[in-house]
Amino acid sequence: MSYVEDGYVLWPAPPDWDAGVREQLEWLTDVMEARTGAKQKRELRLGPRRQFTFEVIADDQSRRVLDMILADHGSDYWLLPIWHDVQLLPAIDAGVDTIPCKTAGFELFADSLVVVWASVNNWWLAVIEDVGEDYITTGLPTDRAWPAGSRLYPARLARLDRQPEEAAWTDTAGTRSVVMRIEEPSDWPAVLPATMYQGWPVLDMRPDTGDDLKSSFSRMTNVIDEDTGAITIIDRPGRAFREQSLRYLLGSRAELAAMRSLLYGLRGRAGHVWVPSWAQDLLIVAPVTAVATTITVEWAGYSLFGRAQPGRRDIRIELTDSTVLYRRITAAVAAGANETLTIDSALGRAIEPHQVLIVSFMALSELASDRVELLHETDGDGVTEVKLDFLGVRRESA
Image (tube, rainbow, N blue to C red; front, side, top):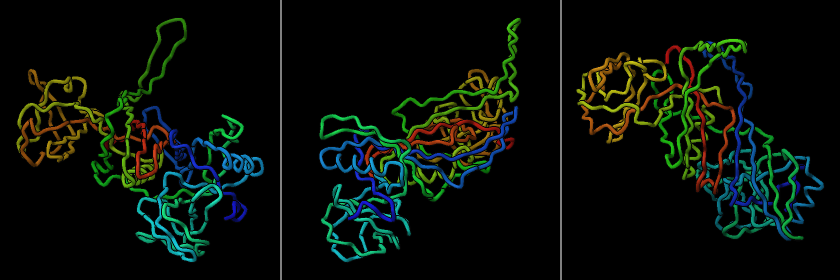
């Protein structure tokens, strides 16, 4: 074991999981916005910048080691273990170059680094040569036998964003808040949702409803106030753009990998996706035949205020048998206590009102920010929280 590998030092102190590990991904999109709400975009980064924030509790030997290394190496490059990608290994013999491990959903790639970790001064660093379904091979054989329960981490080149200040508890223990920025490409497979509607993917991943889902309407208004008379407000687009916050609690490594692929597919503000409101926006109150192109809903003021406007004309119909249908409203008329909505095509099956679980509006949207944060409350096999803020966009076809 050496703390130095090709001139880089391994970060020696694991995080305090009581506070979790915050991972930040940040793309860079140049957005030119017209007064009508139309946008032209340019992606200025090939991939996202990546940053980790975590708390460290160090005592006794680990505190002394961390303090010594920070004093000497604080502004230089580090090798940072990817904490949430930890896994426990079986017993490994000395002198072997194949390590049995899980690889699906882990950041284990050829030519990247891994560390086998037992304690602050008992670990081994290697370069991955090949990745299989249940193993990796390394460029060097293991330097010794490793007991069952040793940890395997991917490792990445990183630098401190700022020098971590110690809050001393005693003369032998303290805590530090660490912010580290990854200094090498953070590649990941980009995968957008497979469901397509009107030429764009649909975000059909249901959010967690245990937290309040925030939504509002943004308007591009110009306010003219000369201080001497009435205030003039001009709404040039003449329409609202839906703002919506969604919260996801990811409970498995497969869910985390799928979310990461979605984020890489959206590329910050650059990508577009249909986002359902996940609210009961319309209530179907009469049977619908398989060939009908109209549906009857409880009066909600749609014929007066919805009027098949963008952001109010595309609907997601989910049935109790989990079938999901997407349609566009083209016209609406009031019919007493109800409203009759014309849709662009028949549903293709007969449905009764009790078979409808929820009918939600959908808005073609972009992420409201190039920056997304993932809170790893445990490792990747446990819980990760992600909050996504979306903003409706103007597309003449949507």
